[in-house]
Amino acid sequence: MKKVSLSGSLRENVGKKDAKRVRREGKIPCVIYGGEKQIHFAVEDLAFDSLIFTPDVYEVKLDIDGKEFKAILQAVQYHPVTDKVLHADFLEVLDGKPVIVGVPVHLIGDSIGVIKGGKLIQKMYKLRVKGLINKIPEFVDIDISKINIGGSVKIREIELENLSLLDPLNSVIVRVKAARAVEVVDEDEDEDGEEGEGGEGESGGEEASTDAPAE
Image (cartoon, rainbow, N blue to C red):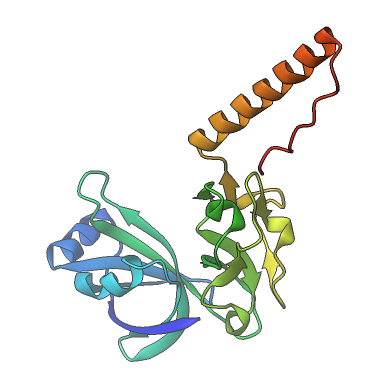
């Protein structure tokens, strides 16, 4: 997992009024929990860019008035209109204690179904995993090269060493569906085949030999 450093300062007061004051100063009110006690602090607004404007997940080295903590960003509250960050929650990472993290999905390979004209649809971009922080990867590689039209990769097919997957086992991560043009061609071929067989049967002619439809 990638790492990033972040500095903050303790908040003397806690509450909506103080939170508004912090935001007026160009800072974001935050809290870190999961350790001995909750700690309320504030960080510079611009410092958050490296954490939220990226699909990556980071282990955060927090420096709060000279005291260091290991943490992961757990939740972010945004303004409903401006999307400005209003508040952030951090979970303190303790040695030997598992954490739950959403790890980005990294697709590798070229799908055989896409090569045939199918459309690749990615349903999940992160997988929720549980494990020790030093065992959590930067991303989960998923090989899509063998996915044919109509095929998919589900959570149950993924194996991660020393980690538990928390999403439902039947959840589809990525699939390949037939493009509309491909579906139309297949239907026409089936109809032609049925008419040909019926016509030969009624006329009493020899049994027609038809090629199998293209996959």
